[in-house]
Length: 186
Image (spheres, rainbow, N blue to C red):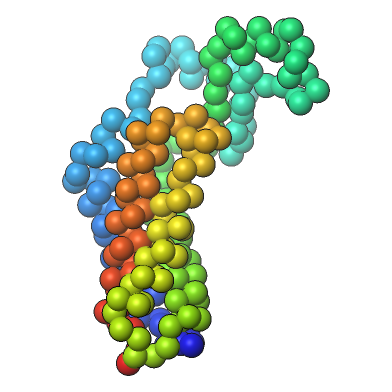
């Protein structure tokens, strides 16, 4: 067993490496260029949302219904007529990219801490690179990649977009594992 205090360097360095890799993937490589689209007649839609006084931080489902109402003819007709979807409202104003980047980096650190806890619990000091890489890659990929599948299952995101994010998660998991294997205590 390797104590987490002995893994502070791979924890921090893997978080930095994933942060940089994600920046490269999202800013320099066009793989995610078409993931998001502009609403048709955006001004009309956003004016309607403003007049409805939607609340930032909420997720709205439409058409909305309770489990009890789901089989009512009126609700069934709304679902047939469409559109059907989820809508998340953020606070008004320019996006606070700095805040999002800080949160992303903190998430990367949390993933690396869990990777350290689990890998350190099953591998001894001096374990070979492949043994450390195997465990660390599985843990990190579960955190970065597998969780993305829920967006297609529950939120209706296209599988193409989701699989691109899962692939990103695979890259992040492999980078994390490589860092842990490289810096594993002897």
